[in-house]
Image (cartoon, rainbow, N blue to C red):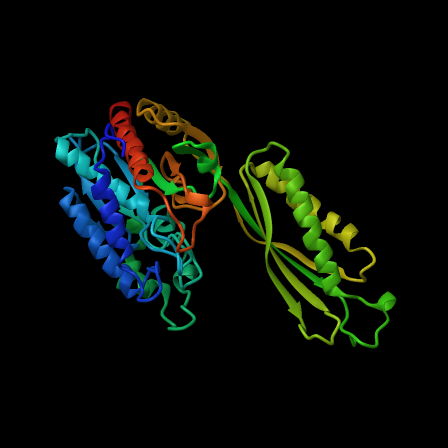
Length: 419
């Protein structure tokens, strides 16, 4: 335990452990957005917000906002945000550490009688994780006006419930979704577990996130001809799966080459692989690949996509297969952190005697959407063995308190710097 930090480490840890107990029975740690246990978790979070001196409300998109007024009502708010929902069988810290750290900062201000010039808010964003509606970052999308009508009409496969109705059930009001849009945020800050091994491996305390990588997903369809697996000679086959296997190999090889090129974070993964007809005694005639590509620099992403199809065609030569479709099914640009906020976060980290490192995020976060309407930045704290989205996800109490302390110091500095 670091005794010089302005955060009550024990109380913050206890909050996280209590919230973790609010989970689906026999399925730790599962508290998915729109579920009964999610609402139970939010009730606990709302109670802790109120005890920390925050006034709690739900906006039209179902985001839960705890607010502390500042000395100057005309000033824009300084915001700390993240999310309290989890993936199925996820961990106790992804998202929740950021929300509870924000509350710990508010509790410190209340305890010390700190009066800020700016309003201060802690936001629990609705459904940052991919939800039952196949959509992530629902609340933060709405805050920047990017939650569209066709998305609101999405239905949950099992229940048939429509997203707009589910938002209402969470306490929002989808009929007035425009009211959730924000133009009154001076700075948005987010703390998150790293979900990777870098900070732990380098024995550093804080990652200063320079950018959230852009994500482009490509669908590639490779076709051949279905034939009898026992009677068709090898030299006349048009094997779509043999072509797809060559494609996967070249995608991984080119991604490794690019990742070493020094243009920031870059990864590419073939995460979905559908074979037709998928029968043991039939030569496959069609394979669909879904490629998830993430890059910190947009130009690097564009170069990868532009050069990939010719590379695959060369690798597939001799298999008899051909590419019949090559298209981007989603394409999100990188979200860059605000340079001033990066500098202040780094200064705050060093002032507390902690070790910072600038790094990009390969995972998506609410910050990417907030950055469209306000100066935004985030920090990482270490993740044991880099594990996340698993029950084994772990960060130490002192690591979480250290991250909250950096937020605390940064808010104080920004409060005097920003108009």
